[in-house]
Amino acid sequence: MGFADLSIAEIADDYSIPVEKLFSLYNQLLIADKHQKTRLALEDAKAIISQISSQTDLKGERLGG
Figure 1 (cartoon, rainbow, N blue to C red):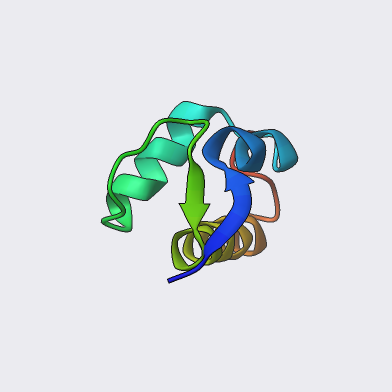
Figure 2 (cartoon, rainbow, N blue to C red; figure 1 turned 45 degrees about the horizontal axis):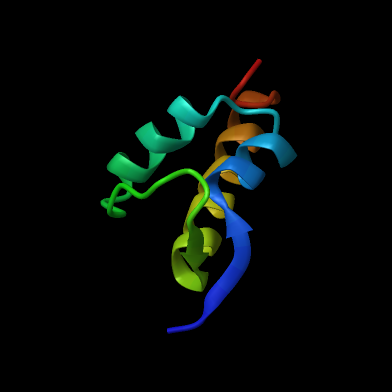
């Protein structure tokens, strides 16, 4: 498994989402809780970004909004 050059904190910043909300999404996706500065496994990063995108598309707004 490869690693993405992204951390939870960077994804939260990129999508203007509180880190706590991202950790909540990680729990929903059954991704092991990690430190917010840890580099993510590629599949984990793809899963969380996909989830953010789908929720944004459904609501017409960002998760942080």
